[in-house]
Length: 478
Image (cartoon, rainbow, N blue to C red; front, side, top):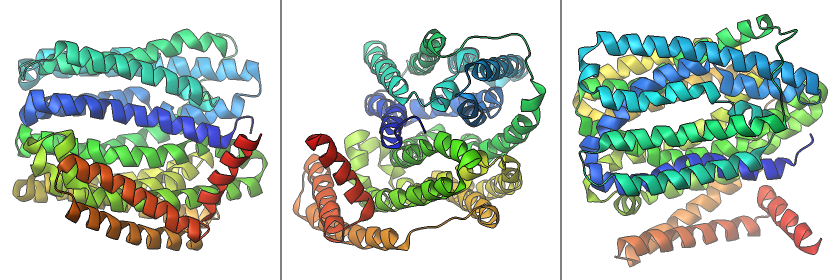
């Protein structure tokens, strides 16, 4: 590999966290302006539009990373692959825009909220310029991170500048769409440093089968991951959608940190799988050790600090979301391990077609469970349905990959993380009991819990922690 895995992981974390953290900071402001009803309206429409943006992407966000990573050592091949995928994305985006326009025309309920749907639907038009897969494939994580932080900071300033009352939810939707599109426009301008469009000797056919298989998988994955919000909006109130969307947004902070660390492994694993199977297996094992060290304490800490976190971030109006957030904590573990050991392994080993059955079954289960649970349990029922669906998907894919790829989960670092997380939980409980001020509770609990966790792991000589310490020491000495 040409790039530093540690550096890529760090900047991939910065990139993906900025995609969650800045909107979260914006949510702290927006939640107090739009309240649950306004947040729910926007979240519901964004959820509807996301079906079309998912179709427009056609699996390229993952497939593109793999194919660019394979071709990056040959400039001519890189130009060819980039041009082919760019044009495929343009064609799919055009089809998606037409379908979205037709739905707006034939659906009276959507026309009643036409400005909101158009504001959210702007993302469809901007998807023509969505080439993040290029930069991730060539591992330009520094550029991606800096660009993302700049755009998100501008978005935050724009929200504070234009959204001042609960009637301005359309402006909120428009600003968030423009912010995402700003990333895409920067991408196109900067891309000339790395690739050129090449319109000769193009071979679209080689991409069609894997992309169609991946697109079908993404479609079913979207059903089981997005249908809960859709059905919640149909079977409950917009306030419940607001509580649910903010519960998801809150838990996604941690999920994003964990999956972005393992996400930086994908280009490297795709590269090594073709040339060095031993190094490939070692990288997978290293990934599990890192996840053991990070995901278990984060799950524990988020569960225990859910109440002060919600009160500080969104205010008392969103306390009905607390049970949903606590239930959602299990997704930190499921999605983090599943991202590395299931999803990424299937992609980098060219086994993406094996995802399809698991997504189909999970989508069906999710729809059935949502129909049963939402009428009685509202957003909490939708959360339970989502967790069951994620378990089905990842358990299915893990069993499949176990048969084709050697997967080793390091038991030592797993037990060390479980034990030290238990000690950390005790320190947080004591802090919560002693502190009465909500902000102090949150601030001091995070510091005490983190210090306790790192000290216990240091005493137990936890391998991932000592690798980080060794790297820092080497840089300071060098």
